[in-house]
Image (cartoon, rainbow, N blue to C red; front, side, top):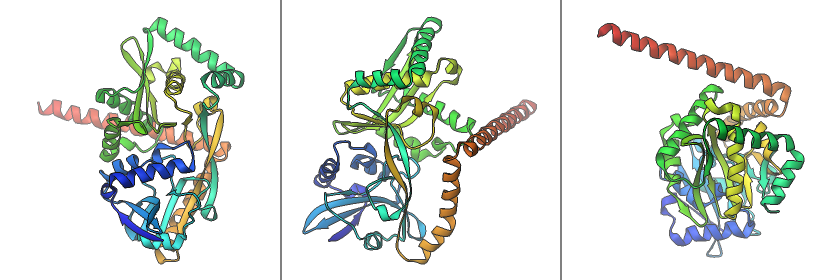
Length: 373
């Protein structure tokens, strides 16, 4: 075997097509985060993205996309944003991990959403990733949801009718390409991050640019998909995700909190399910994580793994000392509701406090300008 490490932009059309072919050889359900278009889009915005091209007998047998950080620490492309990670390999290909890492200039490759059948000896934990499985057809899913989450289904339909009466006719637009509509959604999402004490991803310009760039991509095998629900002419909820030809990956859902009493997020998700099914989507991957709306909507689960690929180097040892205990503590909290609820409450209180402080600082700056004037 031979490994050549290149920048994503150096891949030619033939190599990108080989990547797509290898993806489909492993499963008919192709997660868009594993498509070459996603790695190339991130690579245009980040200088640390690389792809290991793996050859066997003079033919390409796989691709390993990664980010290379200081001290030989590697991460998946778009680390912290992606719900599917891993190598893209021809059937039967097995990689020697220390050799792979050395060829890539890495001591460690850390993952948290790895395709669960890859590198099993290096998994530290496995986690469910809820999905909406539409392989039995849309009607089959809706029948199943009414059976398992009938109260949610009925209350969402009732609130949608009420929204139409009180605010304006409800409509759903799928595959919206308007950049202004995307900015509205990202504004809602930033507000949600701040309210809940989370780091605002869209405070990082490259992530905003990435989403804007992906909105403009629309090919049969990969696209950015924005959909919005309107009441009258006012947008109230939306979602931006990625799709292959068979899988829609949930990514950034958000809504206008002034309409929270109508459950706009659930209205939007059910409308999105119907539109996606009509366009041939077989699975909507809601992503790893405990969220109430995911529990209400899911009718199946995938599995993703967390862990590290390593080779014996001082950097790998230092990384273990710093990262592994933190991840272990985080997973302990996430897997125990009696710990997760108070932790989530503390984050929301922190977000509220930061919002109050920002408001006071803004008022103080405004007051100073008034005095000077």
